[in-house]
Length: 592
Image 1 (cartoon, rainbow, N blue to C red):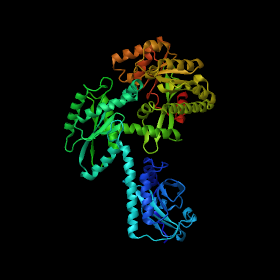
Image 2 (cartoon, helix red, strand yellow):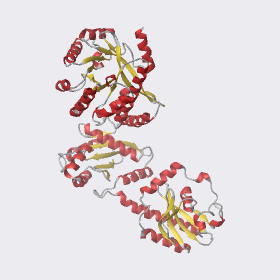
Image 3 (cartoon, rainbow, N blue to C red):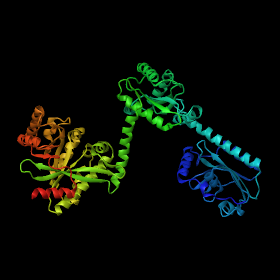
Image 4 (cartoon, helix red, strand yellow):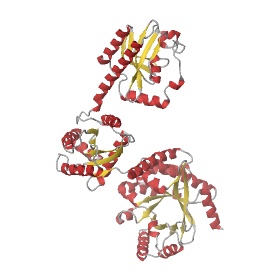
């Protein structure tokens, strides 16, 4: 009998990837023989009166035998293997004569003298076929309906053994509680027992913050955390939680009883938390928090529920009483931040998402423009322009900060070199984050870029915020002094909004102080603000710094700044940030 190959029956690439993931998570491949499986394989050979039987697992490129009778090797190629067809179709396959079958007659099995094959799928509870329980013979033969059913029963026995062995991975060895895997299984079973759309509640108890766990492990060792977990189990049972799951190193989850309201559940857990605070060996060095997450049966994924509870428990660290209910609004903000980081990483690798614009700095003495500030802009291919006020603070806290500064410096210097070839000699200022100041090779990279573009060090200005300077004062001082020695100009950005000390500012090799734009709002009408800005200008001059005011939008504000001795202004009064060509036109128009 020829087996008809229907392409529609074959697994899609996405399904195959999920199937392989399910197979590998069971950790069966390349494991030693097991008597539990061998007993079933021997039974199959005896039942069918055939010399060969196997529990065959379909890997990406091979059929590996967890158990075998009458086979000397451990694996065969997947290509043209009948067991691979069983995995693809997730259905029983019977080939009465391989040599007479148009698909399998050229297979390795047929070439080795195998004539008969029958295999039943080994299917997980999620519907993924791991391989086949198969029997093979050296002579052609047929299979009765009873034999087909018997082969299916044997496959079911194999899967029961697999699940039994894998169940050992559902109990945490320290606490003795069911673990995260069992939580997911029980959560999925809930959909079978309850009506879709029912509202339920779940809670996660976190015994310590990540920093507290790290500190405790460094000082006391992992055994201390194990004891903390063991101490927590009987206390958790006092919370009336029912079945408790150990879902993280020191995190436990449970479902609220059906019918309990959110208000009642919060009150119960707060009462338990208050009582718990007076017990336990770790109560003086750890902070226990509770995160509560509502969910809808049939509409929420188990892993999403765990994520929501974990987020609420983390947010509870900042709550007054350490209990927090999951907030979809806050979660949306976190999801957006996470998306920004991933999408910006792709933007750095693309050629057309990022670009620089340049905002002029205008002298209040003669109206000349000798310098500009380079500002990063991001245009996402689907969402369009994304505000730098949104993405830059996020990026500066990640490992992308180094690559971002590298991109901006490179683009700014290439533009400077292009302007100079056109007879436009402008100094360009680039913003640098605190992370960059801590990079041991930062100065070398800046100088290499200047040399590569044929630029003098004085053509570049580095702008840093007060907060960045104070994050690691000693390291920042050394980096800035080296840059200053070679002639790179340095500016303190957003002056007046940070928390730096005057003593430290006095020792910095900075050339420029930029007064933050927040001080420019209503400056012409606010006497106290004018007094403050005037003092900042005088102080900066006394320390030997040139002063630039940011965010200047009105003639009245500019006139006050000129009278107060400010050196330069930057803002919409003169120009918005401009593309390179637009800036060249703006400069040409002012020269006329």
